[in-house]
Length: 290
Image (cartoon, rainbow, N blue to C red; front, side, top):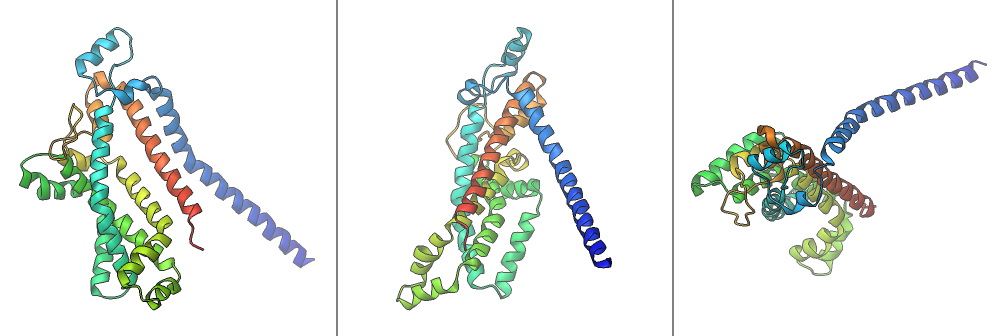
């Protein structure tokens, strides 16, 4: 009798505990859905073709449109192209360095130098983005005597490195040791084993880490304010000031006539980041190391 009552008590306790978990999980999702609803409700009106094909409007154009009860003309094309330029250059800088550092840490898990690299990666991961922007300002903007897309890319590349380094290290650690041993036993050089065997086998984890690193920097504004500065035109020169969607959102916020564009720009940025995260999760499931 006591045994059956104990089972009933445990079963009831499990159900209560499961219900509490579900409740608090749903509670944490409420702010997310409220944010999404607010963006959709206020951003869908300006979410049109012009948003992707025209540069940001002037304050006068926006004011005249509001006085006529019309949609604000213009879009965020200069932010889209500028952000693409900055991120592509940041990827070119961060991926080779991050992957090589991750390979070294996976092959040399112990040692003073390996420990120092891990510590620095964790330190950079927790460093406020504004501080990284100041560092990029001192390293790039001051020597070049100009704000530029290159300076913004350096700042974002620094922010990407910790995620790429640690994801590369952890992914390579999950690979069977027999892969490396078989390659070396067949007479292949260490470089060929890494490039032709280990990295292709770890592609899923590496690509997922890269996508997560990109989504991490997509919404950063503070470092770009100190490095890329912004531009009202489309710019493809990495040595000149360049805009980005987060910078435009900040500029729209400071101008009462352009406030309506904040919501559509934020909705676009959120959709891009959401797409990157879903893609990363899909690739992680598909290329999961058994």
